[in-house]
Image 1 (cartoon, rainbow, N blue to C red):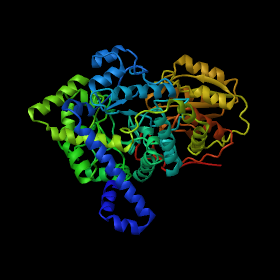
Image 2: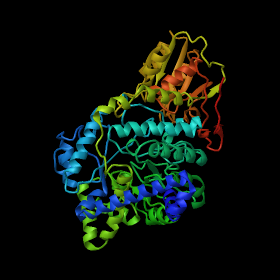
Image 3: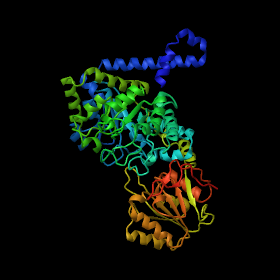
Image 4: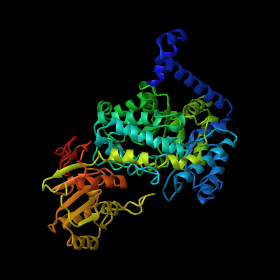
Length: 599
């Protein structure tokens, strides 16, 4: 790991470093920088009361779009009206932004920069005077909290289809620079889970691949891109997630506790390598998974609360000494099984440092405070985690420079340079799975009808790829929703009568028989039909069509690339980063890893 390399360099001594030349001199500078960061963190720790230290252990959500917005939920959750008051009163270590109806933090890039600065000023005026970690889940694809005019980019699985670590690193560097310009200094990414279960309800295209080698390569590239692509004030902390690996889950941990019956040997072969790759690149933090893996901890405890996993494996065997943060404690996998006062204490006992989104903040803080008062947790144990958090803040320049230049936001975020770079990368992702009718490319498409999946209420983003693609193809749009009604299907069939070519966008056919009915009905018209799997590429297993294309994402940048491929302006270059098994026989592979047609 990088920290060990620096420590060894420090043993060489000044004379040997000077004799070794410029590379060793750079190593000495890095060592000096690391020592300065440690000194900053230790000094900051010495100035904190126990109450302030406990505050540093929590990352919370605040409600509103500015530091001074009064919101009823702030009052309900924290006993104060505004986000700034939450930070000043509770002196938390970090906040996390969301774009949903709940927290509703995101409007536009300049608003976020002002919001971030307002929260940092509140932190600096609190008793602790410690700047915040400001975090977000900006993974790309479906998990995008900040949409246009910020640069949008495709899912991790789309990047996996390009087979390019260089592309993954470029995407991460662009995202890092834009996030930091908006005052966000930590991204809960990359997803290091290997999506080995095609039926996984929560990971899917958030994973780079079902193959550990490819996932590891791209995880490492993204960690480098986020953390090492520029000045400290242009980089963000990463959080490789969800350790020890959420890729084989059959249950969504937001709604229940997944139990993964994987042997330890298989875990070491499949799930572990991407996390090792992230740690080898010096990932600032690791996020835990709310999963039970009995082969790693026979007690069946969620990994987040498991000392054998968090300490025995992650800390002791793997030697990781960065920040370990929980996945959201308000998720049902934890909240339904453990009292709000107990979960954070168990997490700290397991070896975790920061608690993300406790269901009840006051109860969580009380649980930790009471545990220290009773001797169950020592203040030394609290110090250990707080020091890791403060080291991260020092390493990213948060302690030294927490505020951002609001005047620079418009020049950086969503710049043409960034958008063009992402578009060029996305152009390598579209994968043609099947072209049995020789329909592609569409040499003379004539009048084009685009029908199928849309979800206009997708959090923070009007998901309307049907209209987006129809515009690109100069065709007619007929959105039919997630679960088209008989009337929707009949309307699409009627519209197809006036079309020469039909493109059907699908998303989640396994759980939507109505979408399958739509595709079959449009095929029955006798018109040439192109079926497109918009997100997870597994849809072809649930509906037969002679022409299948996978895009791994439905955002505008991916629809633009799809249009270029369909019209023959771009040769498809994507290769499947997963196997696509038959729906009725998982052992039968319809389209193998690496498959992808071109012309």
